[in-house]
Length: 314
Image (cartoon, rainbow, N blue to C red):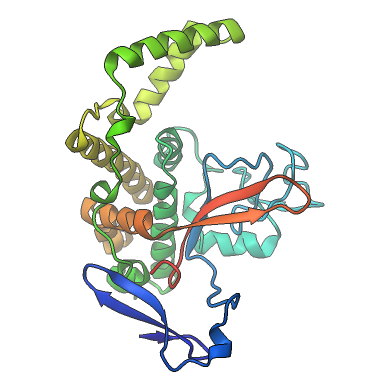
C-alpha cells in the first residue's frame, strides 16, 4: 500500500489477474481531486525514444528533451549539449543527465563507444532496431540499472531484491501478451506481387542502390536475426516467431554482460538473464509502459518515446 503525499490517492494490489491500481480514496477532500487536478507526477524508471519517432533532430539520451530541430544540427555542440565521454553518439542536456544515464539508463554498460560492430552489445542494439522493438531497449536499460545497483552495493544486494521494483509490475511472458491481428497477415501471392512492384520503384527512383549492395545488406541483417524470416501464418506461428526473436535478443544481451563482468560477479545476476525472467520483464514492459509525448513549442514536432513507471505503470 502506498499513499500519495496529500492522502487523496492510494495504490493497491487488486489481484494476481488485475495487478495494481491507482484509486482516489473515499474520504479525500473534494477540492484535491477536482477536474484538471494533477494527480500524479513521477519520472520513469527507464525510458527510450521511439525508433520511428517523427522528430528529426537530436534528443537527450536520458530525459528525451530535444537538443536540436534539424537532423544533426548542432550535433553535440558544446553550446547546446554534452556528448558521451566515449563518443558513442549519445548526447545529453548537460553533465547531470549524462551522469544519471550511466546507472539509471544503464549507459555505463550499454555504451558502444569503445567496442566494435562484432561486440554482443552492439549486435543487441542492431537487432532491436532491425526488428523494431523498443521493449528490448527498455529491458536492457532496466537490467543494466539492476546490475549496476548490485555492483554499487559491493554485490551485497541479491538479484531478487535489486529487481523488486520491476518484478512487482504484473505481467505474463512477452510472446503471450502481444496482440495478434489476423488482418495483417499477407497472402504469399500478394506479397510477391508487392515485392516485385516495390523493387521496380526503388530501381527507378534510386539507380545507385544496386542489387549487389542490397544483397549484402540482406546478408548482414540475416546474421543479426534469423528468426525474423520465420513464417507467421497463424497465431501459434506468430507467437513462436516472437519468442525466437526474443531469445536472439536475450542471447546478445547475455553474451554482452558476460564479457563486461568477472565470472564470479556474473554468477550473482545470471538469474536475471534466463528466458523466463526476460520474457516476463518484456511482458511487463509491453503491458505497462506508457507513451511519452513532448511537444516542441512553436513547431509541428513532438518527441515520442516510451517509459516504464513505478506508480503510473500500475
